[in-house]
Amino acid sequence: MLLMTIKENATWVLSQWNLTYSVGWEQICKAVYFMFDYYDDTEILADDKRIDLSSKEEIKKIGEARNITIRGISKIIKVPLMITFFNQTSVVNVNVAQVNEEFKTTDYQKFNFSLCQYMDSIELSMYR
Image 1 (spheres, rainbow, N blue to C red):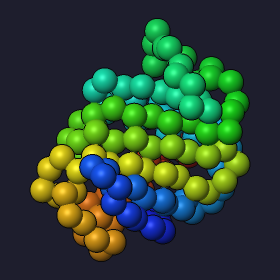
Image 2 (image 1 turned 180 degrees about the vertical axis):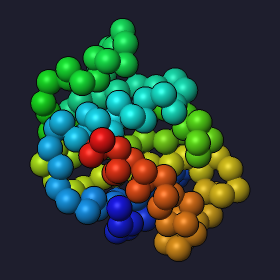
Image 3 (image 1 turned 60 degrees about the horizontal axis):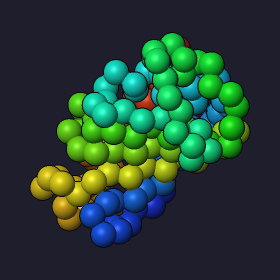
């Protein structure tokens, strides 16, 4: 994935990434399914409406929408993180809480170094 923009907004770093290729709903759901176990206090939203899940398997059955968001506390990055995928596009929005030194003050290069490998892993999960 390619980091396109970043900006700070109150206590969050807002960023936009581009996938290598535009993806459809099935690939997006695969990514969310893959990421689900790597979050605490996980919430899934489709078109900004919270989806109540009784199991991880239900992610694969979420009806197609314009976008899907996974948010919670990342066990890997160790901060609150919200990732929104947009159906049939290559656009991914990522919001990271500025709760530790790594993300309190950031610039393009530092932020890219912090998240690029993580975001690339997510993109690869779409094709498993």
